[in-house]
Length: 144
Image (cartoon, rainbow, N blue to C red; front, side, top):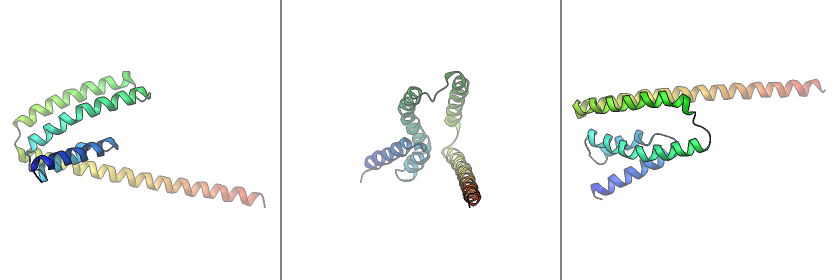
C-alpha cells in the first residue's frame, strides 16, 4: 500500500466520522501524522481544507432544518474566524513538535470533557429512570 492509498483511506475515514457528528479532524490529523507519516503542518492544512466543504454542507442543512440562529451565530462566527486566522499565523511560526504537543493536549482535554459529559448524562438518565419507576410504583400502590 502506497502513502497515497493511506492518505486516501485516512481522509475517507475522517470524513465518515465527521459525517457522524464527531469531528473528523480529531482522527484525521493523528492518522495522517502517524499512519501516513506527514508533518504536523501538512496534516493540519489537509484537515482545514477538508473542513471547509464539510462545514458548508452542514451549515446549509442545519439552516434548512431551522437549527441556525443567525443573530446569535454571527458574533461566534466572527470570533471563530479571527481565532482561526490568528492560529494559522501562530502555527506558521511554531515547530512541528510544538503543534503536535498542543494538539495532543487539546485531544486529552477534549476526551476528559466528553467522558465527564457522558458520565453525567448516564447518571442523570439513571436518576430519571429511578424516579419514573418510583412514580409508577406509587400510582400502582394507590389503586390497591
